[in-house]
Every structure is written in structure tokens, then in C-alpha cells.
Length: 347
Image 1 (cartoon, rainbow, N blue to C red):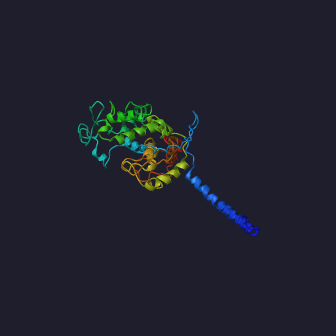
Image 2: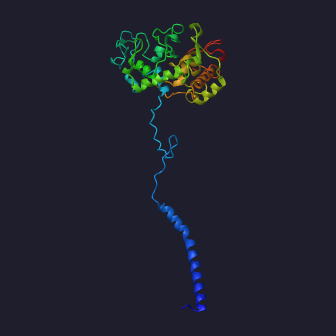
Image 3: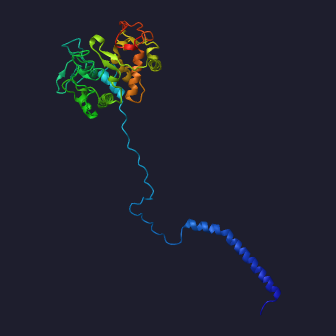
């Protein structure tokens, strides 16, 4: 039995309203349903990832980078240079060695060392007495230019009888070979392993290699050797006295004074200027490395041996000005006009 026409119309309108409400509800909930499907993953079973073909770049995440291995601290070549200059002094640990004095020949009056009397031994084990006056310093055996008899301590210049035949700047020894030489000694130089620790000997070897191979200034970039009558050496041209004077004001004046007379050397014999005008072959070494037993350390800041050499030459050229850097109360006679050691820098 069919409903009356009026009821049929009412039922049709109700169905239409319900269908509209259903569509609206489905439309509102669809984004949430899709989001939920994405979060849960596909309904189909997971597939094995495709394997890369031969030669194809891998898309797998890179492994976490490993931490670099720790590097050894850099060797202090300035300390090596100071030890090369003088390895003993009044302060520990160097006070343990006092060299036998050459002024009391035949009397062993030092202290420390393998025999306890201020002497050292050569490489073969025999005693190396100090009657010749070398004081066991590497500087004395090889000179301020590290060349031994071929350099400023050799027969063509100062003629030091204890100068070694080896030219440290002409060899090709490795760091390990120089460490072994300085540790064990040879027929001319003593075994420093009896009085110095391994790191100190390594620093001396690194200093020598730095000068030899150009990481540090080379003496041939600063002065040339001359006969004794010409003062043993002469500064090279190319120095900038004006720049050198500025460097002295910046790096030296706080200790030495603006004119270099605040501190005298060698028992009052020299001021900073008068010493440099007569012994620049030594002062280049002090500017580079510092003064053993004092607060003075390396005074050059260049990043290469050539740059540091230029700074040293500039400073030494400036110190050739007798008016700006006078002797002051120094007792030693200063250079005279025409002295060849400063050359054209002399004022």
C-alpha cells in the first residue's frame, strides 16, 4: 500500500536533508582521515627498498664524521734558539749545570753533568774539558750563523779554535737525525742528552731545521762575512731604518728605553745601539729567539722566514743611527765614521 502523496513529499524532503548533512560531514572529516592514513603508512605490505645499480651514487645517509686525531703541540723554535745560545743559567732546571771554567785550566770547578764537575762527554764517551773556552754551548761550536768553521767563527773571520767542522745549514739531516746528534754527540760536540730533556733537544733541532729550510730567517738574509780587518761581517742592503725605528718603539723600548740606553750589556760595555753596531751577527739571533735567562722572547712577528728576516734587518739598520741610539753611559768605544759593519746605514 503506497503512502498518500503528502507523506511521499515529506519523506523526499527528509531524505534530501539527510543526504546533504552526510555530504557535509564527509567533506569536513576527509582531511583528518587522509592525515591519519599518512601517519600510519600505507595499508599494503612494505616493499624492500630498491638496490642502487653498479656505479650509481649511494643515497644512504653519510656516516657521522669522525673526530680528527689530536695533533702534537708545535715545537717552540724560539726556545730551541735560546737553548742553542745557552742551555744553562741561574734558574732551575738549568742551574743544575755550571760549566767548568776555562779560566782555571787543569781544575774542574763546575758542577752537574755526567761527571758532576761541569764537564760533558763527546759521542764516544771521552771527557770534553773546557780548556779551550767553549763553555759547552752549541752556539760556540757552530757560531751565531750555525755554520761552524765555514761561518763567522771559522778561520776566515773570528777563528775560534773550537768551531766545529760541520755546517748545520749545509746538511740535510732530518729532525730525528739532528735530535740523535745533539743527544749522543759526536767527535766534536758533546752529548747534550746528559743535561737536557728530550723536548728541549727536539726544540733545538727544530730551530736548526727552521733556519736551514727557510721557515725562520737565514743569516745570509741579514749579513755577510768579512775579513777580520773589516769587522768580520757587514749588514746587507735592503733594510728600512724608518720601519725598524717604529718596530723598536713598538717592541723594544719598554725594556731598553726609547734610545736604547736604559739597559746596558756585557757589564756596562754596550748600549742597545752600540752593541748592534758592532755585533749585529749576534743581535740578529737575540731578536729572533730572545735572550736566555730573561723575559725577552721572539721579537719578530712575520709569518715566513723571509718576512722575519726583513724585520730583523730593518731593526739593525735603525740601530746604526748613533744619534737616535747613542752609547749613553756604556764604557766601550762606539764605531767611527766609515765603519763597514753598518755600511750605508751608519749615521
